[in-house]
Image 1 (cartoon, rainbow, N blue to C red):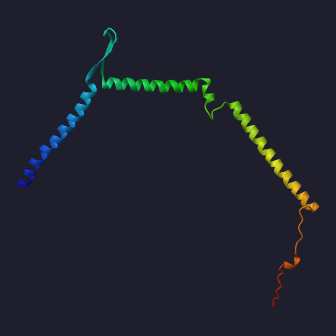
Image 2 (cartoon, rainbow, N blue to C red):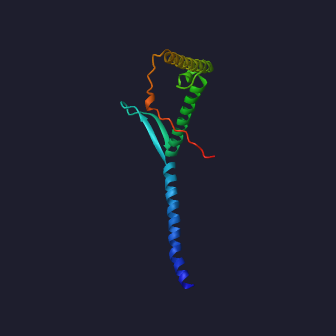
Length: 150
């Protein structure tokens, strides 16, 4: 029991030190984000202050994030709600899609007609003998009939 008490007395302060260090790291980060800075815009010729801003890093992050979200939403709204969307590749109006489908069907049927006509002309050439080659009947192997003993 005495051994465990010594061990706890040694380990417990180390544990608290780690917790305190973690809290100071978090608080230092939060403190750094909330610390205030002054931004001064001055006239270069007269060194007169034109405008002064009191800023923190957190406020700058929030302002930049807000501007980014607004620009993205404005761009999306501009593309979705205006005729600019028709200039996006792959996006078209419904009339163009219907015309494209009709042209595809017509092209497919024309290709099918061409293949049928090519087959027809090939068959006519074969019948007329333009493409006939003599067949050598001496090299044909004919199987001998088997006689069954039934």
